[in-house]
Each structure stands twice: as structure tokens, then as C-alpha cells.
Amino acid sequence: MFGFRLSVKKVAGVLLAGSIASGAVAIQAQTTRRTRRESSANRKARVERTIAETYSHRFEVAGGGGYIRFQPGSILQKNNEVTFFMTATYFLNPKLGIIGDIRGMYGNAKIGNNTCTNNCPPPFLPFNPQISEYPFLGGVAYRLYAKEKIAVTATAEGGVALGKFDGAAKGLTSAELGVWQSTTKPAFSLGANIDYNFYPNLAFRVSPTYVGTFFRLDPTDTTHGPPGTIQNNFGFNAGIVYRFGKIK
Image (cartoon, rainbow, N blue to C red):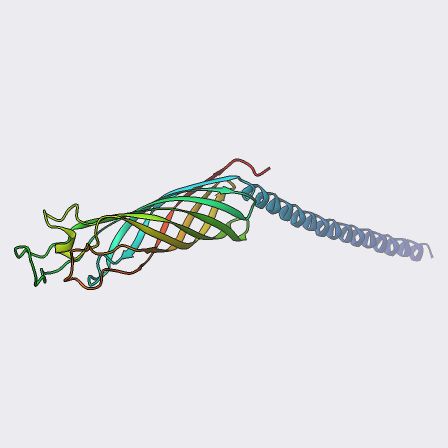
């Protein structure tokens, strides 16, 4: 009889210990789930704070280089050009900003053989004179997408472009080469800034861009096709963005 009571007590003790252990495991699981929920909430709050800090800056300055295809004359093929850009943006609010933009584009025109047939200069060997264009633009920027690491901003700008087309022409004129006349003409640009944020105030930018220019041939040039309409130039820029100041 005594042995039976002892066995009952042992069984009861084992059951009690198991129940306590199960309860502890359940409490620990609930605590873990709660901690995970709190960590997720904290992470979301941190991301929201970072986004707010990143896109509440009043000013953005950016600079770098890139590439563009440019047509140097009415009947000349397009040439490759390297570019630089310097941009400053003043944000009226986290989405809308005002842009000031300076660019430079440098390449070599492919003029080929001297095909002039009327009032021609002496024949010359084919060469590729260096040309350059300098757009000075202003316009608006509008953020279409703004997350912790990525932002996409559409841009539209207008202004003028200074063209230098016969500075390295070996004494020949732009009319003799068939390139545009060196002058200043209207220009405009459409593009998109794609930013990857390293920090709220520092980012890497890639910008697909279109630049429209209105250069024309020298009025005395009657041998190299129509005087010129709009030149449709496509390329991209890449560089670094620095943000500062705060939108009040």
C-alpha cells in the first residue's frame, strides 16, 4: 500500500513538472513572438524616420560626367561625346524642386572628305575636328518615387546652349566643314534622376537624359544640306548627390 502511494506521488510530480515546463515553453514562445513584432515595428519606424530625414532636405547639389550622341551637322553622322554636369536644386517641398543646370559636351565631328562643289577651299585630308556644346538650363524636378534607398525624379528644363564647332578646324570655317555655326541657340532637356542613397544626405545618381538643341549651318553654307532643325541628342549622366538644409 505504501509503495502504491509513493508511485502515485512520483507520477503526480512528473505530470506537474511537465505541465510547468510546457507552460514555460508557451510563455517563452509568446515572448519571442512579441519581441519579433516589436523588432518589426521598430524597423518600420526607423525606415520611416530615414525617409523623412532624406527627403526633407531643402537643397541638393550634384555633379559628375556621362555620355551623349550628338549630330554636328545637317548631313553629318552623329558622334560620341563625353559630358560633365553640375546641378543645384531648391526644393519647395519634399516632391517639387527648382533646378539650375550647367553641362558640357565634348566630341569630334566626323566630317569625311571635302565634298564642296562651289566656291570651295583647297582640298583637305579627312580629319575629325573637336567640337563642344555648353547647355545652360533651368527648370523643375518632381519626385515620383521616394524610398529609403531609391528615389526617382522627373526633370524638365529649358535655356540656351553655346556651341563651338570650328575652334579646332585647322583654319577652315564651319561652312567649309559642314558643321554648325559657332553660336548660342535655344535648348531644352527632359530626363530622370535615379538616386541610390548611401546616407540621408549622400547618394549616387544615374540620369538618362534627352537634350534638344537648335544649332544651324552658317548662312553662307549652301552645300551641306538644309540649314538645320532640332537636334535630338540622347545620353546619360552619372555622379554624386549631396543634400543639405531643411524644409521648414
